[in-house]
Length: 220
Ligand code: URA
Image: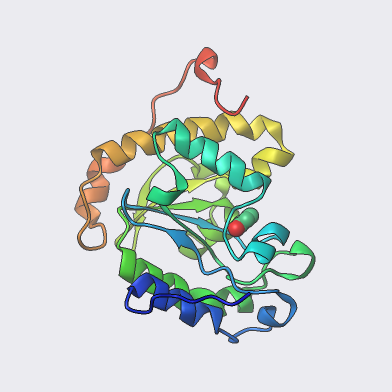
């Protein structure tokens, strides 16, 4: 699909660079790159794993069933996808939706770094273990989801991937609870004009209070 970006807009110019990327073999099997979309208005960057079928067809991130769940979560904290930036660890669809290989993830690193430099998000929400692994290799998502922490000056908020919650309904309550905690974090996080500082994280690193079961209504 042809894209006519306004290259005077730095985000659009970066998207054009990503669309032209041939740094790993994934571009050969994909219909097009999925650079990411949205804005830095809310100060949040969501980082998923990789485009799937629908994303590959449309050239947009999270437009399938997992995207619907993500949008529900955003709505639960008064946001919509236009107010956040959404992208993935790899920007081309892996064949058969397989996990991205370490060398593919490494080849795409540059684009994540460029997006972080450009958007300077207050919070990076990692969705699933591949996105978490970019910042916290070796960690376990079931252990650390929903708890903010800072790594290399970036305030991170790890969450389960919405697709995991689709396949494993017991994770939906966790996802809903984590969105609530994210909402509280954003309400308290300082507005970032530079990457979050360790000091900013120290104040934000309050564990979320436990929720009563009857509050767990989100996502069914
Ligand atoms: N899953 C992802 O990780 N990214 C998408 O863009 C869609 C589904």
